[in-house]
Length: 273
Image (tube, rainbow, N blue to C red; front, side):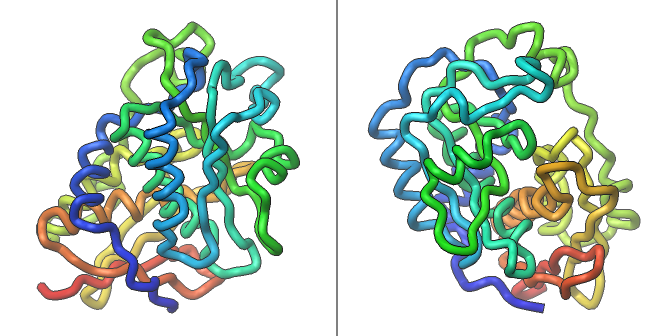
């Protein structure tokens, strides 16, 4: 297992991003109004500074070409009117790069949410060649996902409501399903699991499962990868949610990657009881 470099979110980031967790919504229809330079500068600075893993990074595209986003089927599900974008990059040759991209990318997504901006993780319906060009890939990198960035239109149009379930609240798995036998777990674990329940995932599959083992909390994946977005990337998003909530109640710790070739993704090693 490989321990993550010591670059945890600051307490200010932890509080801000955790407050943004319940506010984040996936949106695909935007008003076309440019994001302020101040907000873009804030996000760009975070993209450059928040690099908890060496094989994952986020690039801000200040002026996003409309062709960056493709519909799932033709124009269905297509992003409309997004002035800017985020491109989530990783080095696939490195073990654990998928969850590293999810973890790092969700931090920028939550920062955007805290600034009052809207986003949407997209791993399938995108132009990967164009995304690679605008993000200026480094050797060995590839595009894992992108997100539109801007201000969503007030009311989601019919196509967007259809895509995301007719505007109904997303069905979230019960804690007992995500973490069987967790009723007696420590406070930091309980807080982390609540934050995980509202983490975004491809097709709302919520593939993360947790178990307590040897004093640490193991996250593993359940299900089958879909084109464009792996289960491990989804789990990386959930890992950030978990860490923010755990740290907020005093449960400091660090994620350690699981060995390659298993369903286990990583282990949270708490610092103290």
